[in-house]
Amino acid sequence: MEKTLIILKPDALQRRLMGKIICRFEEKGFQIIGLKMLRITETMARKHYAEHEGKDFFEPLVRYTTSAPVIVMALQGKNIVEIARKMMGATFGFRAEPGTIRGDYAVSNRFNLIHGSDSPAAAEREIGTFFHTGELFEYKPADFSWIYDLSTGDII
Image (cartoon, rainbow, N blue to C red; front, top):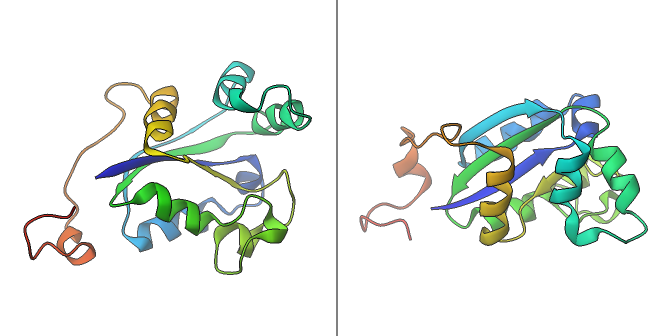
């Protein structure tokens, strides 16, 4: 099972969209293994978005990310990184397809509601930034066999 980090950014909180967005991931069948609200510090934001340092949008991105609390979620599921990114839609809300999170709720380039890991390696690193030992929970959901075809005894 693959893991990913999802951040519901300050605009999702300010626009009261957190429940609707979390619901989409639950309804898809993904397992929430960690969830918390926090305020991202400037140090955390700079570390998280380090690959963009020096770009013209970096400083505004840091200010935006630290402007209000966020929800961070660690999710688990088969092919979750790829599927979650499809569910989020294109980075710029005005380019995102209807039916995606950004396509349904975002218009802005910068205020795009959500972050999701772009690879399993990034997910591992990002989850480690936002969750400490003991804050992630492994459990078998009751509907697991209905979400994944377990007829072969293997979900991979």
